[in-house]
Length: 107
Image (tube, rainbow, N blue to C red; front, side):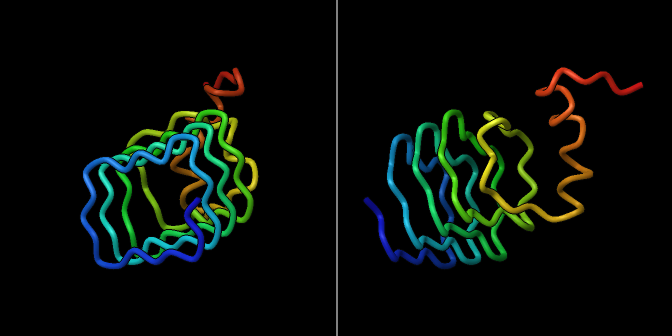
């Protein structure tokens, strides 16, 4: 379990947190190419001033996870984003992805 951890000014290629338990973790001013949160249990996790290329969160349990400002090129596990906070710009950017995941046709 990672508890009360701060990563600052890091460059991470692949961060494997699959099945991990995270509480009060912050990635500040970090560049993460790919983060794997599949089946992770994460609460109070944030990414201020950070970027993430690929966000994997299949079957993750999120509580108060702040994704505002991130612009991942790919997200897997959209249905597992319950408990996350995103901003209005992200909602617009991810609209097609959300629609596809929900089986909604946009014409």
